Length: 134
Image (cartoon, rainbow, N blue to C red; front, side, top):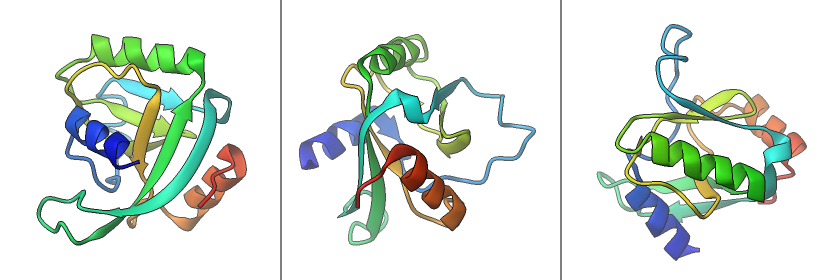
């Protein structure tokens, strides 16, 4: 598990809790959409050491393994948008705005599952739609 987190930390700069995105900038960045049918497995865990400024702070991460077909889409998308800021949307909500360092071939993503902007209704939707296990 730590190796996956370490790998994804090097792939994305600025990983952290999602920020509030206004409607004016929602479509300004390339977007990668993840629907319930795109996910093969999910889980949530609490980790430390993800925030450089406070390495002891706990962060909740949603671990997503995409279906083979969606993993291929993610690989193409991240290859096309290397060194660009993108948006990853889960169930229609922007959950992270990373800068892609290189293509992601694994089909695994660790997404923020915490903070003010990831509200209770969204978490409930993830549990209901994606079958998240804590």
